[in-house]
Length: 164
Image (cartoon, rainbow, N blue to C red; front, top):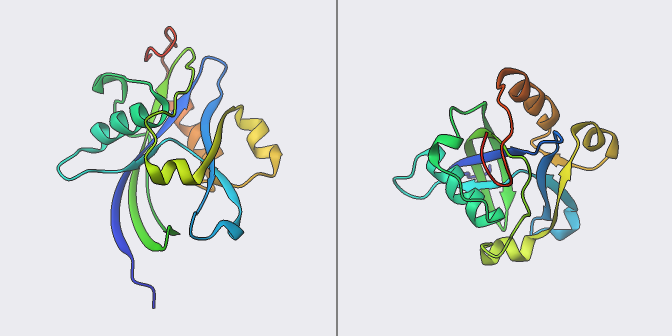
């Protein structure tokens, strides 16, 4: 029987003016033979932190994009997932936030040690290209989650690194 470590996390669907979503590419450093996958910016909540606070912190650390809390609004998706990473099995309750920007030059200088060892790169993906690519991505229903979020959240994009 697998024993899971409980975890709460915030994920960010960062979408630019061209409708592309920012994803990172990486692997599990404890199991590199399991291959790579694409995933959204985000991570685990610190003690006492709210989901939006975590989303803002993680986005700043992982992309260099610093936005006010008001840029995150209400979550557009919630789910629970179970997965292994770096030798630990997690049961993660997570919330996804949609953030639109005109554009942003990603700066990964704020990556943690584990992120530096497990993330190989990033890309702004058009959703249709992601689906057609045959690449693995997380969550597995990411295109549907993104489509629902974009269909229900209408806002114009603003300037470089500026929230809608």
